[in-house]
Length: 202
Image (cartoon, rainbow, N blue to C red; front, side, top):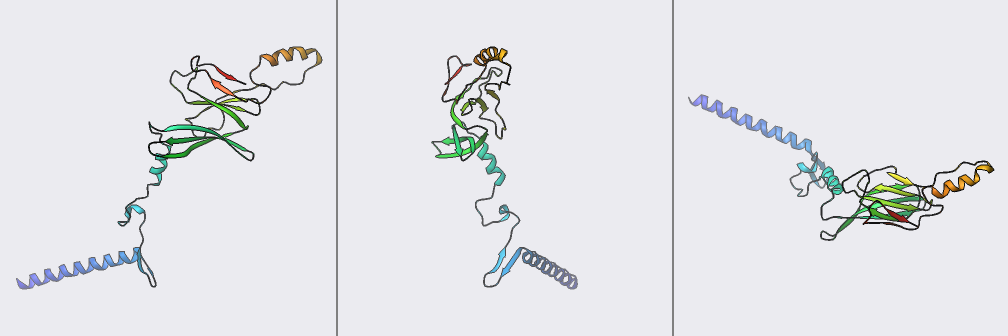
């Protein structure tokens, strides 16, 4: 009947009006009105903004910075500033044209020299180590692939000798000659690529 059709049409129009009112309310909640500028749309994240082409991938970009690609090169450099010393591990890619600090390793002593080595007596796989010579006469071995390491994997240094009686002076001198490490600063290091378990220091 005509009356039923009119009621259905009126109900449909009311539903449309309610939906429009609801949409207007939601728009009012999301929009901020600034005098002289008009409404400004606010979004919970950049992904929800249809006008932004570049989305904010905060966590993804951080993960990408830590990822080392097959054509990347690692450069290890000693860095000294005031009383703080560190090793900085750079990522360099000539093809892509970027160079940045991937991570750094804090040092207790001022580094003077370093050499790279890929040999570990306890590991049959190829490793990525750096040996560092310092002012203190110590040689420290670090794993370049580890991030946030607090101390070296191994240290070659003279053990401190406690004061002994006169009768034991000669024996302590002999012990010092055979102990690991240098009496003074380590000025140079080199790794033997043929006899891989040997590196020389001066």
